[in-house]
Amino acid sequence: MLANMVALGSVLGLVLPVILRADTSAGVGFRFASHIDDYMVLQKEPAGAVIWGYGIPGATVTVSLASGQKTIMKKVTQVKAQSSNTWLVVLDPMKPGGPFEVLAQQTLGSVNSTLRVHSVLFGDVWLCSGQSNMEMTVSQIFNATKELSNVAAYQSVRIMSVSLVEAEEELEDLPEIDLPWSTPTAGNLGHGNFTYMSAVCWLYGRYLYDTLQYPVGLISSVWGGTPIEAWSSARVLKACNVPKKGYVSPDTVSGPTEHSVLWNAMVHPLCNMTLKGVIWYQGESNMNYNRDLYNCTFPELIEDWRHSFHQGSQGQTERFFPFGFVQLSSYLPAPSPDEGFPDIRWHQTADLGYVPNVKMPNTFMAVSIDLGDRNSPYGSVHPRDKQTVAYRLHLGARAMVYGEKDLIFQGPLPEKIEFLAHQESINLTYYQQIQLQRQDNNIFQISCCSKHQCKWLPAPMSTFSNWTLTLNMKSCGGSVVALRYAWATWPCEYKQCPIYHPESALPAPPFMAFVNGHWGRVARG
Ligand SMILES: *[C@@H]1O[C@H](CO)[C@@H](O)[C@H](O)[C@H]1NC(C)=O
Ligand SMILES: *[C@@H]1O[C@H](CO)[C@@H](O)[C@H](O)[C@H]1NC(C)=O
Ligand SMILES: *[C@@H]1O[C@H](CO)[C@@H](O)[C@H](O)[C@H]1NC(C)=O
Ligand SMILES: *[C@@H]1O[C@H](CO)[C@@H](O)[C@H](O)[C@H]1NC(C)=O
Ligand SMILES: *[C@@H]1O[C@H](CO)[C@@H](O)[C@H](O)[C@H]1NC(C)=O
Ligand SMILES: *[C@@H]1O[C@H](CO)[C@@H](O)[C@H](O)[C@H]1NC(C)=O
Ligand SMILES: *[C@@H]1O[C@H](CO)[C@@H](O)[C@H](O)[C@H]1NC(C)=O
Image (cartoon, rainbow, N blue to C red; front, side, top):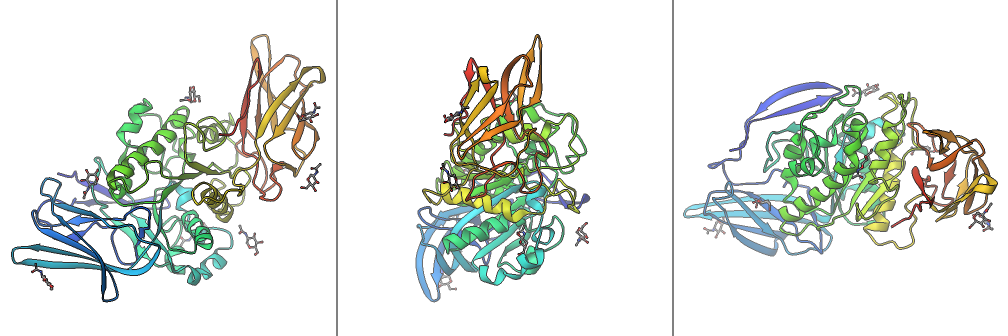
């Protein structure tokens, strides 16, 4: 019933095709879904964790949770012949902690067999997905040795990494797992270049653990050089009218590009588990591939994953679960025309410049335009400072997901943009205090129009205070129709953008604002 699929192990572009036969059809024995294993983290309260697997049609399956000799709960269900011989139970909500054993006992006539997984914790489970910047391992980042040496303190942060597999149809179970649920070690975190486990995912979980002090489960499902279309279901592609085949630029796309193949094999099989949320670092491969559709495909992917995980987990994964993402960083040399990365960064926010917003509810973003790494041995498209990215992302989670009310998690954006025609200047008032780290007379640009032509000209900074900034627009002889900030592939050097929020050191995100009779407001939701 399931199509044959091709499993591809890819290391730095070296692709080894392996033909796998889907092994989930009738007659296969009693087992857990392949992501259910020793050392796993199950989602804690208020949700109930889902446990599922395969068995003999008609058999009774009793799932129990045990701590030492003590059975804490039992759930009984039947193997459903109509649904490829699967069974599924939802556990009662559990407080964070452990360890526990999960047992599943199948009985049918004289058949009586038991499965058991041990060292199971309850906590928050996060799925990490995207392309190579999410795939880079801890051994590839700055201070790798130091970051690999402190794992002993994080034995309650558990990791798992899904194998690189594509499929033509939605798979029910993962065909392969590179790294089964494990406690972190220097060996499995620093496994080599672009092979399990994701550094951003790990660091994000580690920072969360520092705050939460309860178990965190991290699942990495990532493939380098892949466009969003490969991670999108047919529903997303249809909603955005994505053409069947587009031109694929080989310089930014090296992984599978076929529609839905990674959604099918690497995400759909996880939909029946209970999750806390998702983090995502992807977009580079869409720089020259359906770029103008990314403002649709990305919000639609979020919506579709939310719908699918909610439904698959019997409503246990929240319908609008938190979705965090990294806004694209910088790289060199900047292509000409210099618009791919700035457009994708903008489209990552559904063209609003900030999240959450009406099109992207319950999302959070880590801005990383100031983390470019011109000397990265993996190419400047792979910056090595993943600590700051993960740190900024975890600030978003703490504020949006874990309810830290006054935590600043987003850099300064203008609240009011005034056009002072007689003074030939623009007055920006920010939502937050700003710290002008550096004068940069090219980073703000105005779209200046005369007759039938508009072009972007620099608007130099003139005066500033703690909340406001004045730009000079004398260079424009015609009329000014738009203003933009940091609209370049490489807008500034490492941690040297002009505008930051003072205490949090968060950079001002890129934005574009239009004059519609009066200045459009860059409002924050
Ligand atoms: C199955 O075996 C276990 C012990 O191996 C026993 O406790 C249980 O009662 C048996 N159940 C059935 C239905 O035979
Ligand atoms: C990873 O890449 C770096 C930089 O190219 C190289 O020095 C190192 O040998 C690679 N490591 C492995 C395990 O291939
Ligand atoms: C997405 O951006 C393109 C230009 O890049 C624009 O033409 C289109 O209207 C935008 N779509 C949405 C849904 O905002
Ligand atoms: C997983 O969820 C889907 C969608 O609700 C459902 O069709 C499927 O039967 C579920 N799998 C199991 C093992 O129950
Ligand atoms: C690397 O370690 C040094 C020394 O502790 C520190 O100053 C620097 O910020 C670290 N870099 C990153 C990216 O964490
Ligand atoms: C810019 O706006 C701020 C806040 O509204 C105001 O205090 C300041 O006087 C304005 N600057 C100019 C040059 O108009
Ligand atoms: C401006 O900010 C600095 C540093 O945060 C602070 O010391 C100073 O009092 C502020 N000035 C005003 C007028 O708010």
